[in-house]
Length: 221
Image (cartoon, rainbow, N blue to C red; front, side, top):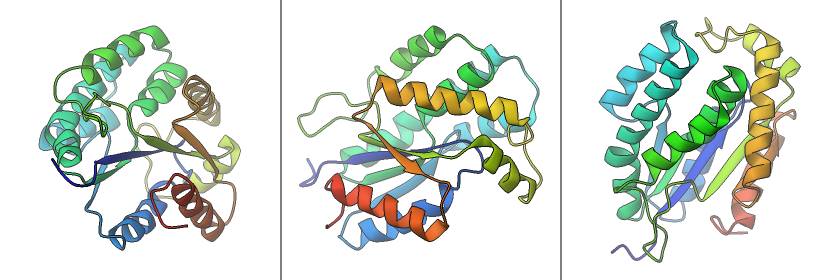
């Protein structure tokens, strides 16, 4: 058993919220404390999950097919990437995880919330899920940083970004629904979520993120 238990942190938010730009700063800060840090993403993180990612981002499909593929990728990611890293005591920084499915495929695409709850229980309640310091299954992140941004602001940012994928090209109304999905997940699990006001200059957001990590005891005060 490692001397320091593994730590699982996910980063969530609608497209354009800027969450990905702050993962590197957290990685550097954690590595400065001597921790091993693994940065990964969803969908993705393993060869199989990356292949599924390309299908989901660029192939038209119905909402249920989409959510089944996303959870299949998550199962492979959990078993072959996240869980092994946590067992050896690493910090896993994951760009999106299960909350994204509820926000995008349920709130955004209309797949029933209860269907995703069942899939979540199947995929993450199975053998191979990460464990907490007491050895109990801990399939969900210990902390989720939710980068909350008004969809209208996100739309302005995306208009200046790269060629959009199938999700980034959705209308503002879609992202309003996705934002509502994230808010619902936050209400359902408030102890895990940390809301970050992403409608601020990048340096202010970075300060707030590092401060949140310190308040949770992950970084020195």
